[in-house]
Image 1 (cartoon, helix red, strand yellow):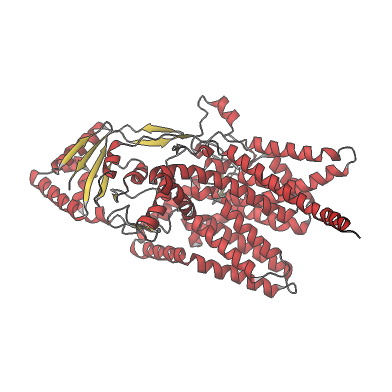
Image 2: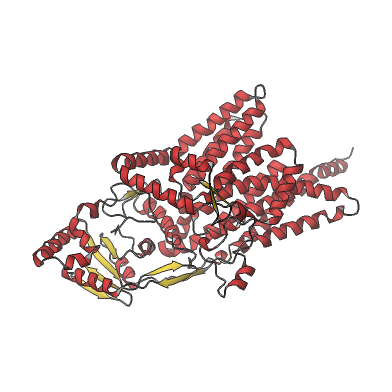
Length: 615
């Protein structure tokens, strides 16, 4: 045999593998391009804010605090002394996606803290959708061995309307970490002879998921228990059960090693809240249960149309901007996806589909919440398993929205839909007259899924920044800032401008699970209550007023409170716009008069605010 013939045979042997690789690369590129379209105009990377809901302020603040704590303060990012000054608070139970914060650091170093956070947020939204789509494609291909099935699974999962509607919630959209762990854990279970390094990789991915979203880590912990039990049942008693148990133990071990800092901080804060503020903890959990009763899935919402679709919204209202997720059906799902799931449920091999059907059912039932609801307004009152979990399994007691189970059951459902797509394409190819149209039919189904799940473009836009905060940022001295009134979460956003500690006069709603002593300043210093109830202060005798003012001036010096900002016209994000919040002018005048009685050293008046300097 000549060298030329040998080379020809080698090329023929390698051709299917090369063709498969090209197919995967093409699929990944198409998914990235679709991600650009779904998150449009995030790819433009302008210095603009996402205007869907006020939680965007927290998204920006999280990015800023990760960089500021690590590179400027050189401290643990899960402790923040710059809010609730001077006591500070733990962020262990806060929705804090530290991997996104770390990934935003290059943008902040290049463009500055504020502009870097704005551009970094847009880049991270695009990265999240693109990376989760690509990872879901390879995960589904690994399970089904079907490129068309894997592509469909990626479309169903990554571009879910629920996810687009929550683009301002980084801990909700960070599904790439969920898919990465699910993929590695499935590979561990699928091996005939599991290896220790597979368990180590899955454990590391699980720890990364915890740092990204403790809520999703809790859900995937339940996923692991169900999937691990299923795998052990299949293997028992002879098929490498010992190796499987060792590998599962490795997952737990390496997860514990890599997530130890956050786990310890979480346990410490939970214990502190339970021992030092049990009444506050009970009120918090009762409030969270009330939120769950309002934020849960409804059985028939899956069959309801996508109310955030651009065409529907252009017809229904004059303004086509994306509004808050509360305005839309968050349970909407593609009808084509449901049809493919039914095909997979009926015709996929039983041993391959069984686990995914079980997981879909488990998380779908949990998504329905504590009581069965047929629609958002029709609650049957029939108790469901989540009610038991919320009451008796402590981690689930911190939950406030069971709709966040949706990405998990949709991921499992998408795997079954991928089996359905594989069966459908194979059936079409079997027909001699229609076989050549198999790829065209598959493309048509993919296009239909994309069109059904389409959501209006994300509303990015400029956000005004009061001039007083830029003046505060120009002061190089260390000091604290106090804003009156708390401007609907925007105080966190403005902190990325001035980067000074903030005194809060009420519990920060964006960080509801704060440390028990975070608000001790206002709890222990009765004189500061004059800022909360100025009407009561002005009803007091002059001697009492003088004593309160003198006590407050002493507190200002002790906590280095240099500036107090009085917002006359606060601004906030609402339903795709930046709005000015009307205040009772009597409220503003009373606070201005009260602050003037405290003898500020300097008063600067701006168009929308007044700045008082006391040190």
